[in-house]
Amino acid sequence: MFIGHLAVGLASKKIAPSASLASLLFAALFADVIWPILVALGAERVRLVPGEHPYALLADASYPWSHSLLMLTVCGAIFFGIHRFLSGENRVGLILGALVVSHWLLDFVSHGPDLPVWPGGPRVGLGLWRSLSGLMMLELAMFATGAVIYLRSTLSRDRLGNWGFWLFVALLVSTYIGGVVAPSVPRSVRSFWMAATMGNLVILLWAVWMGQHRYPAEGPDGVPAPRRVRVDLR
Image (cartoon, rainbow, N blue to C red; front, side, top):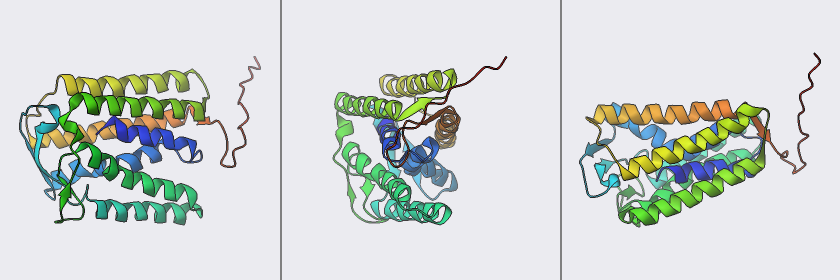
């Protein structure tokens, strides 16, 4: 699952208006952010093999640290603790922690039985990715819902905030559909983790930039935020 994780992060802006979009997406993508790094370090592994569907490319994948339920729960608690230490409040920290754990829950639905419950423990997964059409319909529906919720939960400061959002959506959807319809096998494991790392970096940096051009439609207490109007004094 790819844009399904982003959908949850986008939708979370509704219940965590004070949190930056980048932090919400980082929490939702955390397992996939650290996985290619751990592959590069040799702590986890993946074997690239063309298969009957795009998701079979990542054969014999092992991610006991980045994708196990236990470790993501621990990481979610760390996210909460760091936010609690830096801000002194709990609500957003709990949401960030829940987003970290949500990655495993969504992957549990889509993956085959390869998701560890804990490092070295049993592997589980419902295997929705065996049905490409079913998984695509679910992810696209989730992403559309998450994008609409984010759009309604924020206001644009300027034209960049508007166009930047739609370009972000178009880039992610086109990349997702292209990767499913016409998948390409990376030349090596090194090219895989480099591409994955760069992709995650682009998404998070774009989220940082977009967050500078959009602001919450209402504050944490539910009070609508005042619209910011630019006054031209020339």
